[in-house]
Structure formats: C-alpha cells, structure tokens
Image (cartoon, rainbow, N blue to C red; front, side, top):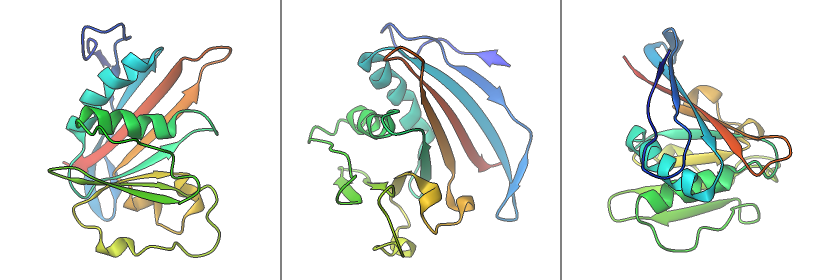
Length: 171
C-alpha cells in the first residue's frame, strides 16, 4: 500500500492508494485501483475532486453509493466545480436526471432512488458522456456497466465524510 500526499495545499488528509488484484469484467482484463479520501471540509471535497476528475474519461459510468445524505450529490457537484462549471448543481432527486453541458464534455447525473419501473432514458445513446448514478442498484443497468464505484460514508457524530473510490481500467 502506498500513500500519496494531499491534492492541494488545503487542509485535507492524504489519500491512500491501494492496488487491488486484477479482476475480470465484461470478459476483459481490468486493473482495479482503490483510493480512500477523508473529507473533513467542503474545501477538501473541492481539492479531492481535482484529482478525481483526472481519473474520468468520456464514456465512464460512476456508481455513487452511500446512505441518504452521505454526500453523493456533493461528490458530483465537487467534480463539476473542478471542471470550472459555475451553474447551480441541484440534486436530481425529483427530475431523476440532470444533464450538465460543459465546454469539452457532457455530464449526466442520475438519482435512481425514486425510480420505479423501467428507466425513462435510453442510455445506449450515451457513448462519450460521463454518467454519475446515485442508487445504481435501483436501476436495471448491469453493474458491470460501471467503470468506477465511489462509496461515501458519513463518519459518526461528525460532518466529515470518507470516500472510497474504486476505478477499473483496461490493463
């Protein structure tokens, strides 16, 4: 296990990078890497997101996991801010899906918590978009569709969060 230093001069805890064994997803060989971030402040989310976005590429799907209020939308908002997106970034809880058009990429943010029945979108058309899905287990999407899995937990009696990021890429 190797440690990296903080992604900025802000008051953030260092992330821990863990190389995991190769796994087989979609009949291809993948290398899975895992990082853990301690996020005590909003500034630490912004600083960490600058690193997270370097791991994302067009066509990536990110499963956001965590209890209600854990910070799933905050993770997406932090990434959008790191990409210099200045428009409001609300939660997609009621519309189910929001699309954010940036200069060089399109971000789709889905909240499937209230989803019942078939998805009201055709994801097969999304080839170059980066797609964040909250409550991915409530969709009918195969979990193998996701190239990243971000697990967010709120630490007891604190506003601090811990984010575990797993990213798979073709080795």
